[in-house]
Image 1 (spheres, rainbow, N blue to C red):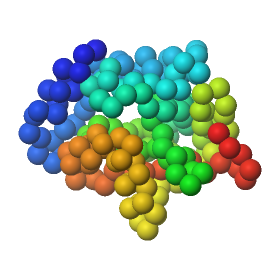
Image 2 (image 1 turned 30 degrees about the horizontal axis):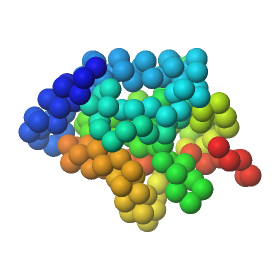
Image 3 (image 1 turned 180 degrees about the horizontal axis):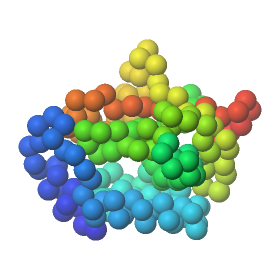
Amino acid sequence: MSSGKMDEVRNTDYRKDEFKALPDKVKEELDKHRQLYLTDPEAAHYWDPIVIGTPGGPVPTLLLHHVGRKSGRMLNTALQYYRLKGDIAIVASRGGTEENPSWYLNLQANPNCHVQVGKHGSPAIARTLLPEERPEWWAHITACQPAQVEYQARTHRQIPVIILDLPDGMKL
C-alpha cells in the first residue's frame, strides 16, 4: 500500500473523536504483518510502517498473545513496542480512532498475556501506566514514533500506554 490512504487521513481535518475506523488497506497490512510474525518472527521483528503511511523507517515490533474478552479464544496482535529502563511498553493508539483497540479491552478484562519479541517469548502481565509514570514514557514514545502525537491530537481519549511486566529475571 502506498502512503496515500493514510496521507488522506492525515490531510483530513478531523474534529476530535470523528476518526472512527482505520482504513481497510491499513487493516490488511497490519494483518499481513501479524501473519508474518506467526511464520517468521525474526523477519517480522523489525517492520517498516511506511506500508501503512507512517514514515520514519523500521520499528521494533512484538506479537502480543491475549485472550478475547467475549470469545475466550487466544488471539494475537503485532504491535510496535518501546523500551525504557528495562521495561517494555505498547501503545493503544489505534491511529487516533475514538475507541480503544480490542486487544487493549481484552487486556483490561484479562491482563495475563504472552509477549513474543522476535523468536523469544515470555508470559507477561499487562498494566496501564499510572498517571505519574506517563509523562516520562509519553516523551520517550513520541520521540521514537512522532506519529503518536498526531494520533493523540485526533481523539479526546487519553491514549493508553501499557507496560508488559515480565516474570522476575526474564528479559526479552
